[in-house]
Amino acid sequence: MTIQEIIERYHDAVVQIATKTGTGTGFYLRDYDLIVTNNHVVGDSRRVTVKGRNFDKRLAPVVFSDSKYDLAFVTPPVDLHALPDLKLGLYENTHDGDTVLAIGHPYGLNYTATQGVISRVDRVQQGIKYIQIDAAINPGNSGGPLVNEAGDIVGVNTFIIKGGDNLGFALPSSYLKEALDQYLPHRGELAIRCPSCSTLVTEQTLEAGQYCPNCGTKIEFPKKEEPKEAPLSGIAKVVEDILEKLGQDKELARTGTNRWEVEQGSAKIKITYNPDNYFIVSDAYLCRLPKTGIKELYIYLLKENYNMRGKLFSLQGDNIVLSSLVYDLDMTPDTGEHMYRDLFEKADAYDDLLIKQFGCEPILEER
Picture 1 (tube, helix red, strand yellow):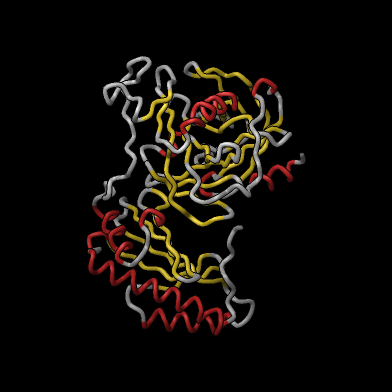
Picture 2: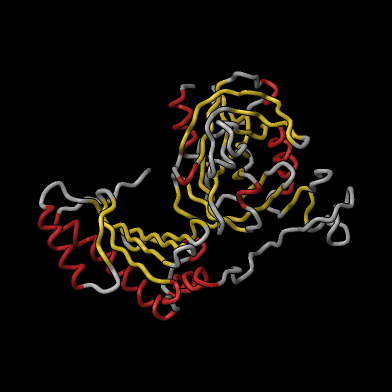
């Protein structure tokens, strides 16, 4: 397969995974009907937000975790059997110097593919073999597939050495296949792999409710359900309570720590809280500048800025943005609800008006 064919094939099956604390990558395997990612990507979350090129953000349950090999499996939120049938390659046929591709979402840059070679096929770290690669991987790549020239998955991109120059490491596909085959008979059940002896443990097989039945290691078994109330406090909790009152799904809105993203009509609103400068910034991305008539548009936006309170039109590149800036001590449930309700309504209305009246163009969106 050519590099272009491999990238296009994997675009549909590589997904973005988000939790309350960050984002990572996963990939769908049709033979197992599971999404594979790293355990450190999902963390302690029992449900994560999953987004693919063929479906919008959905909540999906984490059904398997393995802290030793840093693996986790997620049940797909929708039927994905129509996606490409990705295959696991044979780690035994992988050699130093082989060309590989690392595919993922580094720093939120969706579907980024980097090419490199295998520097060392069997680099041992903490008693586990890893594939050392020089293909650039960064935060957000974790959990993504490492693919060979035949288009097969030979590893799961797992970690980098900070301060190193393209020193990346992927868990070999042989470890992944072993975990998948071990879990397959229990598919649908919540399971954890013993960090000591790698025995698959379910709620039914736990010894005395907390010990591995094989080696006796104490296991903190994950609960089936998330707590009804997320363990948030301060401004983050205020923001999420407001989003719920306005009919938004707070879990789907999360894009990381103190970051949310919601859609209102065709407008996209990004909310960010920076505890270091004490401000909550809310940016509603409306549309792009038109090809002509920009002077008339500027006059209109400046007049609207003069008449509005607490909101402001600005430009980010050629994007027209309606923004709101609030000092955190001024954000209360009542004032915040009024502010966001007004922002959401105005964003949707201005978006349509600017496109129809001034010939503005829709925001560019990645596929």
